[in-house]
Image 1: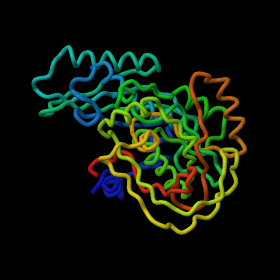
Image 2 (image 1 turned 180 degrees about the horizontal axis):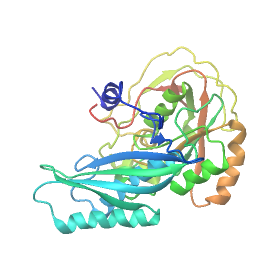
Image 3 (image 1 turned 30 degrees about the vertical axis):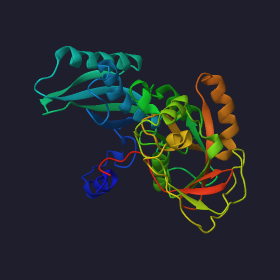
Image 4 (image 1 turned 90 degrees about the vertical axis):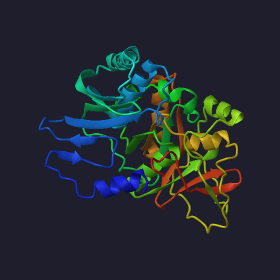
Length: 349
C-alpha cells in the first residue's frame, strides 16, 4: 500500500464540522471561522532524517526546508501565512548546537514572511530526527486543485528538476507570487510541486475530473537537471514511463482549444530507472522543486504572461500545456504523443 492508498483508507470516514470548507485532498484545509471575506488555512508537514535530508546537511538549511514546505502549501492556496507550531523529535544523543542552528534557519525564513513561531513540542525519537510543522494562514477563498477546466492553459513558475543538487534545501516559497496570482487573475486550480510535475499535475487532474497534454519543448528544464543527468546521479524521485501513441495534430501554447481525441496506444517503452535519465525526464519526475503549478483560462494566458513579466521580472513563468476534457496525461514531442504513466516520489511505493 503506497502513500496515497493509505491516505484514502485513513480519511474515508473522518469526523468533520460546519467550519470545514475544504478538508482532505488539497494543499491546505480551508476553515470558515465566521469572519466575513476571510478564511483560515491549516497545514501540517514533516521532514525525516534520511528521507528528506541527510545528517550531514547544513542545519540552517534543514530548518529552512522544514518551515518552507508549509509556506509553499500556503502559497499554493493564494494565502498569507500567519503562525506555526514546531514538533521536534530527536534521538537521545542529539547535538545542541546543531538543533539550535535548525531553529536559526526556521526563524530566518519565518521573519522574512511574517510568520510567528508560537510554540510546539519536543519528544524523543530513536535513531533519527523528525521535524513536523503545523501552520495557520488566511485567504479570501483559497485556490483549490479542483477547478481546472478544459481549454485552460497550464503554467509553472521557475525551472524544474535536479533539486537533489541543492534546491530541495534552499528553495524560496512562492508566497508573494501565490498571493499576487490570487488577487489579480481568476486562477482555476493551483498546487505546489513537491512530488514532481507529473505526480502533482495528476492531483489537479483527478480533483478536477479532466486530462492534460504537456508540450515537451516548453518544459522549463533547470541547469541542475542537466548537471544531474550528466553525472548520472542517484534518482531522488522516479522517472516517468512513456506509453507511445500515434501522432496527433500538433499544437502550440497559444492554441487553447479542446484537445483532439486520443488515438489507440500502439506499444510501450518503459524508461529504465537504472539507466541515465534525460534532463526532460528529471524535470517531469523529480520532486521538491516547490514551484507553483497553475491552470488559468486560455483567454487569460497572454495577459497573465505580460503582467507577470512586469511584476516578477526575475522569475520565469512558462506555459507548458493545456487542460483537455479527455482523461489522462500525455506529453507531446517531435515524435508524437506519449502517455505519461507515472510518477514522482511516492512514500511506501
